[in-house]
Structures are given as C-alpha cells and as structure tokens.
Length: 279
Image (tube, rainbow, N blue to C red; front, side, top):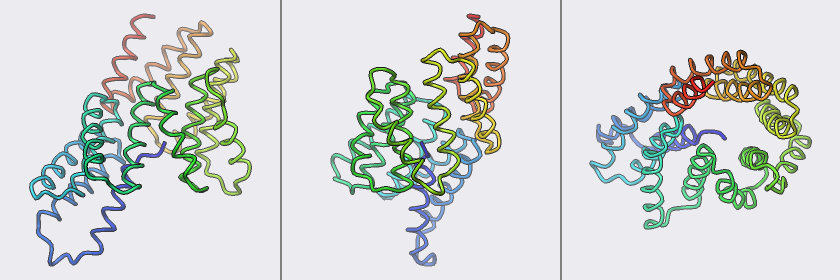
C-alpha cells in the first residue's frame, strides 16, 4: 500500500501555495518547514527524525488551534510510527483522529484517509480479516484508476494471507485489471509475484516461492526500498526453514536484521532475534 504521507503533504503544499507569503504569520511557515523536513526524513527512511518533526509541527498547529494543520500533522505522525511498527502509539493517534472525525463530520477524502490508516494498522498487526472488511467498501465506491488498483492490490494480498477462508474475488479482479491495463506500473507485477509466493507456500511449492520472492527482492533493491527488502528476506527465511535449510535461513535473517537495525524498527528486531536464538 502506498503511504498516505506524501499524498497528504502534497495537499498541504498546494494549500500553502495559494496564500500570500507576506501576509502569513511566521509560525505557519515554521510549521510547514517542519512538515517538509519530516516528509524528507520519511522518504529517506529516517522515521524517528520524521516523528520528531511532525510532533513539533503538531504542537505549533495546536498552539493556534489550526484544526487542519493538526489533522495533517497527526496523520503524518501516525504514518511515521506505523513505518517502524510502533503499534501502541499509532493506535493512540488513530483513536484521536477517529474521534475528531466523528465529532467534526469531515469530508469524504478525510474519512477515506482514516479508514486506510486503520486498514494499514490492522494489516501490519496481521489482523487480515478485519483489514479486508474495512477496505472492501472503499474498492466498491472507487472509480477505476491508480487508487483503485492500489486498493485491489492490498485486498488481493489480504485474501492470499487469509488463505482458504477468503473468497479470492479481489485476487481475481486484481489479476484481470493488470491484464487489461496497457501501462501498468512494475510495482504491481511485483506485488502479484509476492501474492503468488504466498500461494506457492500454502501449496508447499517452496522452490517456486523462493524464486518469486527473490525476483521481488531484486526489484526492491533497485528501488532502495529497505522495508520491502527486509520483508522479502524474512519471508525467504521462512521458506528455507520449511525446507530444513537452517544455515541459509539464518543468513537471510541476519541480512534482514541489519536493515531493521538501520531503520530502528525494534518490533522486527525483537522478532528476528528471538527466531535466531530459537534456531
């Protein structure tokens, strides 16, 4: 799923561009600079610095009761915590946003952002059924286009992860959509490979799964997508353990651990270390 953060911030920039800089208080320029720095940190996978900048921007917007700025800063802050799987803080921020949304009656776009944030949180917590139940209504109302494909890709992955309990309707529609699109982005083909890898593992076709995951990992390396690379390495380790190739599995985990340490993702660091000790 694409991060909402860059999309949200682009809206903020657009709003700022329509104002006369000379007539605006310095506080707003400072808050926007903090938001901009946070976005840059996020794009560089420096999520702790991103959190600090978004927190400071949030405080500034709160100091002048600017509800739009507060919401944007809070959404970006939530995204930066989700990026390194800090679930308790993310849940707190989401609860505040949902309460505000309920009381203020925000527009459909804001409502959709909140739902997508919850979908993402549930996905990361491996609550796949709940995540799928939230995203399905959005797919039904979204017009064909890049956002619709993005939702389909997420729903298709969720169905694959759920396994036999899922109806695989979105998986089928996702594949059909990719076949019909003329200029489909490469990332969607890679997502499809990861879905097929999940299915291959479920069918005990482990070598096929390894090949698909390696292809996906190679693509993410070209994009310098650290989190996705680490995910693939951990998934390949799972497959190698199933094949009783413990040494190779541990090598994959060591490589994934190096990335998680760089990202300061303590959630995955703990998980990987426990697995390595257990083996």
